[in-house]
Length: 176
Image (cartoon, rainbow, N blue to C red; front, side, top):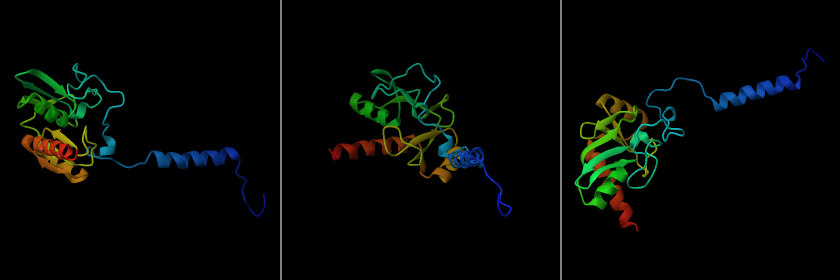
């Protein structure tokens, strides 16, 4: 050792490198409940939220996409979808207006909300299900507005969310 320098062994260097990489991979700081990175969607290893596992429109796993799943009645029977997009597509295919629509509560996907009473955030930074523009349901205005302030998007009722889904389908069909 020269001039007061300390010798750093290979093990110490590796320890510092590992700590540096860990800081990059696992950032510290608090995350709010509305932080999209704190919300797992889709679920990689989902719990069983529903026995109706497959979307009646596209076949996707509704437990994996539990935060955006729907169920509804029609004269043709009871249907279960992974998203409001598939709900809209299925209502077009069946030529029916869905009744008794239930939407999963985004933060608490075990809860199915009366879709008419839920408040939706449309076009936030949350990933969409079957669409580029997310449409997610909340049980309270306060929760939806807080989420919208942090993650963008606009709030609307069920009719607004369904209209947004139908407009996307119409735009898609016109482009083909």
